[in-house]
Structure formats: C-alpha cells, structure tokens
Image (cartoon, rainbow, N blue to C red; front, side, top):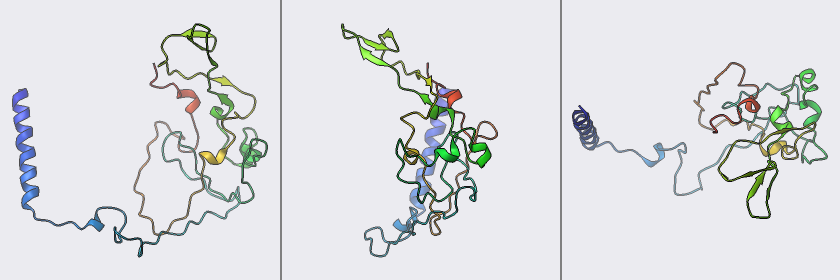
Amino acid sequence: MKLTNIALGLFTATAIFIAGCTANQTVSEESLGLRKTNLYTEDTTVSDKTVYSNKMAGESKLIARAFENAPPMVPHSVDGMLPITINNNACTGCHVPGVAEAMNATPIPKTHFTNFRPDTSLAKDGRIVKNGKIITNTSDLKTSSKSLDQLSGARFNCSQCHAPQSMETIAPANEFQSEFRTEGLNSKSNLIDNINEGVK
C-alpha cells in the first residue's frame, strides 16, 4: 500500500512537470509581483503618498484587527499627541479602562497593566533564581505575571505597536480574510487569558 502511494505520487509529479515544460508559456517579470513597473530602475516607480486620517478621536470608525490580539490600528489623527513619553501620554486620557467606555474608545487591555518580567538573578553558586526559586531548566517559557495598578513601564509607548493607517489609493487590494476563534475578538483583546497557551 505504501509503495503504491509513493509510485502514484511520483507519477503525478512527473506528469505535472512534463505538462509545465511543454506549455511554452512566457511570464514577464513585472507580472510576478505587486509592482508593475520596471524592476531594474526607480525612475518610473512612484509610491502612493502617505496620508493619515485627519478625523479627530471619537469621529473615526474602528479598524478591525488583522488577527486575534493584533495591536489595533489608530483610526484617528494623532496630531498634537506625539511624542509619547512615560510622563506625558495623551492616549491614556481616553483609552484607560473606566474612561474608555464613556469615550467610546478601545480600552487598554489588562496585559498593559501587567508586569511579565520575572524577578531573575544569579545565586552565589551560579544557579539561576527566578521569582525566588532556583531553576535548572532555563527553557521554562511559562510567562511570569504580576498585576499592576498603573500602566506597565514596558507598555507606555503606544506608538511602538499601534500605528495610524495610511489611506492608500494605488496599493494592491488586500484580499486577506481574518478569522477569530470567538465573536468580538476583532475589536478586543483576550491575550491575558491565553498568554501561556501552548507553553508547557
């Protein structure tokens, strides 16, 4: 049975290869990718101008997430909000939980109010101490987490992950269809609940 399957597979692959060789079809380099201009010069290649939304916060429409727990895109103008510093963060004025619901804004998720950095040090004998316990297997990837009362110092720079969407007009159409495991995940995060998913 196994030998028959291998023989059938080889026969199919050979037939496909022969059919491809006899087709004599020429494909231009320009048709292979998204770019339709000369691949060997930039003289005739002009990209679309980057234009961000000029709608103010609260006036814009949410952009659905590209995948589960993806950092959401910023759908509104960020004029006057940058640069973001640890002591001056205009985003928290609308997006901090409790305020976000009243502002019809996406609330900052629980992961941003969590410290995922384990307290790690070396003992005098050179062994690794993680969260007060000596560990021998450094490949233990289970996430350490500690809830915080304020935004984590590792999460204050919103624009590190969240970017505005440029309103392109000549870019190729995006036919990607996102899928989510449960309803509503295209507009909210559940990462805090499954951050150790798949980790032993």
